[in-house]
Length: 396
Image (cartoon, rainbow, N blue to C red; front, top):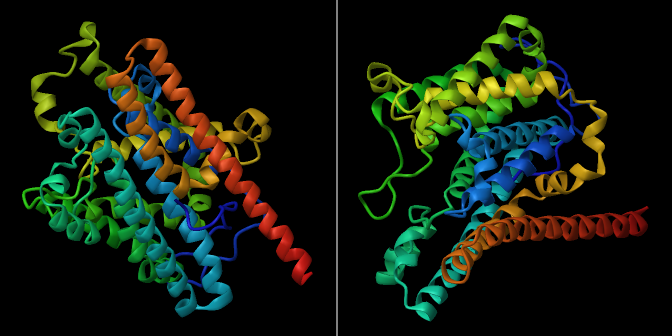
């Protein structure tokens, strides 16, 4: 769900109060598209309950999951794209472009909401199974459709699997002043963002949802830090962290943390490791909240990022392997692919519940869903290329 196709990271930025970072280098950092596409595939698989294939996703092997990857890369690409736009067109025009993109995301959310609820309502009515409405968080819509629709327009009512999009809408809508500050005082802006994260984490700040006893599943006051950190990296921070990432001690500490996280998470579902975490330690670390982006989740993502950047250089030749092209294309068309994946995940859930829940069918549904997501991304990329070629012939 990035604003535009991503490019390579910009050159290193200056210290707080110095001149803005120079424009990004030419070329494309395929790692951003690759891992955003991978996150989309993982999100789709994780949205299918009782599916053995989702055991390959990273949520089963560490504290963080695909959401952290998605939010960080969204902040990174937004800062790169609109950071260059500020240099060319100024703050006012760039802010208008950001808000226009946020509005487009809002329209996409409303469209997704209507079609998704229609899909759920059709299944509930056709198969006389109201459990689907409760399971997918659509019970309020079926009982009070007028109230639920208004609450959806306010981004307070969201059926299951739709929480990421409202989070991104809010983060992007509030991004213009953040970007302006990142361009001028990057480190100070990051510090303020972290302070807001810490306050929300400790004081329980969150946005109200619907019904009234619910809050936002992804607390934007907490998740904004990962988005801003991505923006900070996209405007030169990643280059400034280069020496730290190459430090052997930092890499060793990151690997050690990932190993500990792996052991803890595996102990939740593998009986031989049951009781691995002492009760005293468990009282300190649990719950590892996804809603509030628990520090343990944040640290896990940062450790994972250190290891990935260390192992996957920006110029790695294998990034251009044809085998990885489908994943990269999905990452380049993230908004449409995410929305399509929400529909497909519920359809797969329905098939596994009502028709066939065998292991073979779980694999078929998973592969078919990802294949359809890839097909959509290929179609969108082809159409965008045709439009560019037509524009070039018209104005060239």
